[in-house]
Length: 177
Image 1 (cartoon, rainbow, N blue to C red):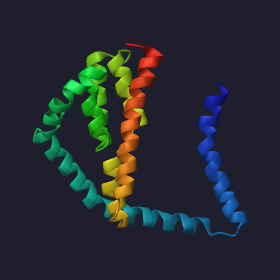
Image 2: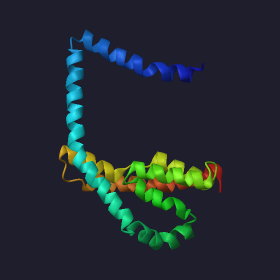
Image 3: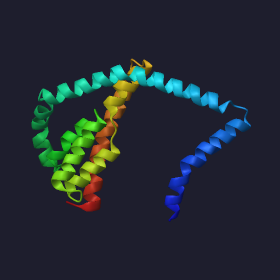
Image 4: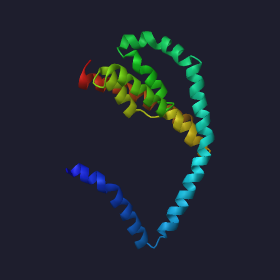
């Protein structure tokens, strides 16, 4: 067994044990704090459900309406000129909305083109380096009552666009076409 495996096996139990011992040393009622945290977690889960359902319905409408396909047709000349494979652009767009839908698209791209293909590597890099910005903003900001999210939206979308561009450049530089 190598060092990384040993650390990965023991890291969480040691961390939990340390927290419990430190809490006990500081005279914190650790079990009561754990139960209270569990109750708060369940309450938060229930408060997130309406926003989650709304987001999932919105994603379904966006895809079923043909808006995604229309937008892709609009972007196709620019994408082709830059050299970005058109197959990964829907992934980049859906990734900002839904992690599960993006994971399904990534799985499909890898199954179609192979994990060692340029498209497979690019899809994997996009999946790992971008965030579900719109999902986070609607579900989590909505659940805690944040109404003004304009700056967070701008920064999140900008970060996703930069992540997509950098994913393309890194895969291109590291693996080539």
